[in-house]
Image (cartoon, rainbow, N blue to C red; front, side):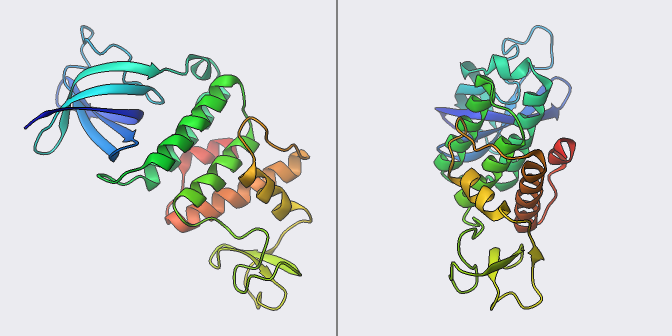
Length: 238
């Protein structure tokens, strides 16, 4: 057994025993971490509110056989403005749930960690809305290697005559490849999705509300299809 340092963003926690909690974090170095915070459910806990979801923390861990024990914790970024607004809290919950679904234990997750950090920083700075969640989901798909084809046919690579969008085929399909696959999308939707995928969170392209809503629906269904699970927090956002 040994003492080691790490850092991570708190994804969630749940009760463990009478007074402890298991705290699940995303570490840039070791992927998903499952740790135990002893006595944290007591009012006299020395950890206070430092292990709340969305908090970026620095940790000292005592390595255990099954779970590492948190012995010290300090806040690197607490994102206090995010927590003061319900819409931003819901959006942060959606980001965290999606990341939790794809993160692996004992696997370097630097790109995934940096994506979540950027998303939380954008929310903390005041960015909110479906455009942000859609952009986050598209970037998440890219990080895990399932980014949708949006500017060329997913089957043959042709950029012309793009006719439908197929979740199973991995994106847009041209007229020659579509067969009976995919669904017809409204004009401009794939171009808008591509713009959201490329954009910085602090400089997201605007669009009419119905296009924004359709884009989020496509991104959500695409990610859920490839994760083979539903993301319940996204249902709150519509």
